[in-house]
Image 1 (cartoon, rainbow, N blue to C red):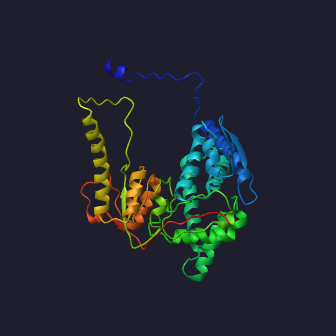
Image 2 (image 1 turned 30 degrees about the vertical axis):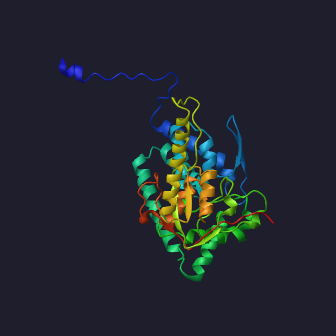
Image 3 (image 1 turned 90 degrees about the horizontal axis):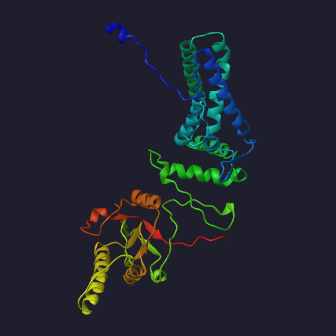
Length: 357
């Protein structure tokens, strides 16, 4: 009786409409689903590729980028979803070829479909595909061209120009291909692409784009006194903060009870003392440039300007991290206990206005 109870099969409740097919018909169905998804992006491939117009119910997107299209298709089929994952992985790891990997995967499935219909075991098919992959990788390595020397530089420029063929700036390859190569080659061996940023300046034309060999960030909102600050430093000490340097208004529900009108002035004086103590500590640490992720108010701006210092608040997190990486500074969340090691330095710091001709 115990053995009989142990052998009793489990009961699984499935949602109404659930597809329970398996075996050869399901494999063929999966291949057909992947082929249908690939057909959606097939016409976007190559320099003659066409853009797709996608509407998700809220906004319209026009793009020929494979990863963008695959992400917006909202595919529900489990097997076809793997093509979306392939495209997103390619975009994250390489940044190009998102459409190509989808079409290659779909074409491989299409080629093995007859073998599935003939009853070939999936393990045999997978073993053959792995052998083909190894041969293909070896063939690519045999055809590889070294990128050292002058010829290597020319080859890298051609590769960069090829990647721009299907982009809106394809007609400006002569400008952007060398710019991209120079930007990537200026990175360390780990090639952290987060250190490369693109800043957009309204107005002007595409041909006015240029590469900054250093860290560039947009000047944020400026308070009175910023015009008195120095605009150029040589070998400055840089202090990076995640601290607010401005007087804040009381909250609407704040309540302060006093028994003597003279006590009100002491409360105001205490607020001013707090902000001045913060500013004094920033000056005493020896910094000449103060950058903060949070606002730097008009009082602090004028305070630093009077002492021939530069400051900028509301600096974007990515820009602040790039400055920290380039200068060796450490972002501080408090103005207490500054030590010399937290300050960064650079060869030259300059505020420059960029505007169209």
